[in-house]
Image 1 (cartoon, rainbow, N blue to C red):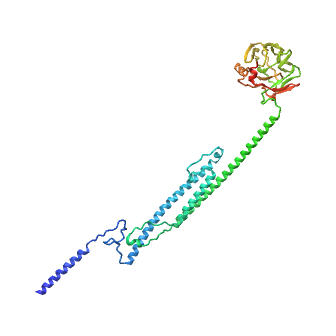
Image 2 (image 1 turned 180 degrees about the vertical axis):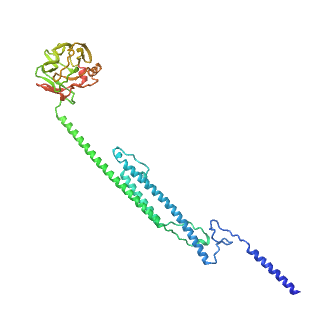
Image 3 (image 1 turned 90 degrees about the vertical axis):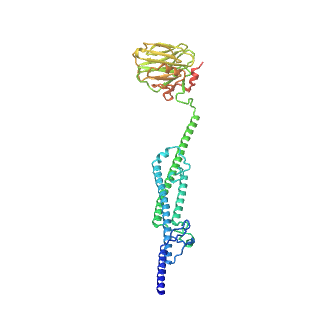
Length: 434
């Protein structure tokens, strides 16, 4: 009986122990993990990392951590290098666009007098327009790019803060990560291309600077040559004794009323059916016969004649007709118009019409090929009848109209028998002569 009781107690205690072991195997233990700690790092109830009892497991864990850190670092490096490549590509594109634009507008840029200044622009896409500043800027850009390439070729970047704390901080991680060889080669090639573009741009700017310098030198030489010629011409004119300064500012002076003192127009007249003759005339009050102008042709010596009879009025002869008399005094501006149709004529003195008439050699055209003989006046001739407003403008010095048939210029007038060309008073002095 006692033995049976002992056996029952033994069985009961064995079941209780087995049940206790089963309950213990299904329990979960929660441990506190420090903030920022890696979930893979084991920590005990005290917060310290639980050391693995297996050296192989600990080595594998460290290797995994190292690989994970290396992968993250490589990703960061690749992202940074991609940004650098994009920046270099963008600058190269802008540089090429700037080179094309400069090449296409090179001819236009040389013709302009000035260039715009660019302020605050130091990028490759917006280079200074001055060649010296451009070369300095390109040199600085090259040095900057080379420095960045050397930094990338070092290929190495410090690793960030260790992720595991506590006992894991004692584990030393690799401090540097190598740059991939393919990426380094790509960067080197891109930099060589960019350097070639920059050197080409520098050469073009140097050539343009040289051309501009040559053009400036040639322009200065041409300007100096022109100024020297003008100075020589001025000195020559100052040394000469020309009495008049422009082709029309002269008069023919006949000191005596003779048949051998006269001026002659070199240019001959065409056949005309109308004419206007204007002149400034000043004669002395002494008696005698003078001819301010006459036009003769073969077979008719007095085709057109203006005669001054001493103190008598001036008379106009057209084909030996004597229909006109105008007063004479000091300096006078005289204009005479005539047309072959009905022989209509008008006479103006000092801008005022003093007489008109008709039947003055009607239907008798002025014959060509004759010679005009002058007295002391400015003589202009037109092949038409001028308007009264034009005649008034010449008389009061508000207009200047050289004749379209015979203009009063030095090249058209030659003097004979001692007649001279003298300086002419200004128009206002003649108009208001008293």
